[in-house]
Image 1 (cartoon, rainbow, N blue to C red):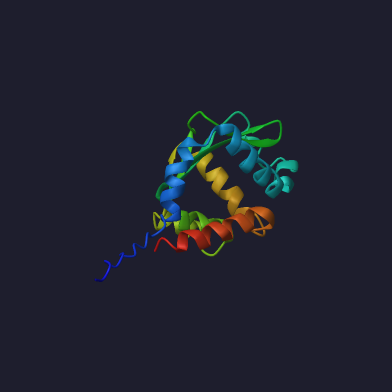
Image 2 (cartoon, one colour; image 1 turned 90 degrees about the vertical axis):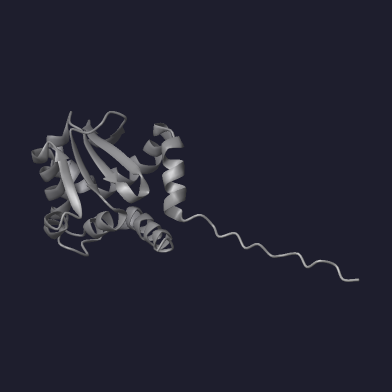
Length: 161
């Protein structure tokens, strides 16, 4: 008499983009602020000190990463970048890989916009000002701790393919 063979069920882990899409709306703004704001303010310490973000004072811009279902809205308060709940007056929208190309300077930012891989909606003057600020950074965003996070997230999202 032979016992039935148990079938092995291999459960495929959820794709990281699906996990991020599911978790992001549930993460309170306070936790997002603790994670994101220090990274942004360290990364942009020089341009912030030189007043390059002053045009963002009292204004809001949203960055929407469509394939991850994440939107971050930023403003400038007392020379610091802060996350906001209110919607942005302008939105820069695109996929994760396009934002990564923008951050790491792998592709020309203008090309990303002309090819409509990234778009600006709403107050285009504000959106272009922020795009030009990002474009003007000598080393791009992929430096320091923020760069490490971007590269980790890139490896995770590569598993989704």
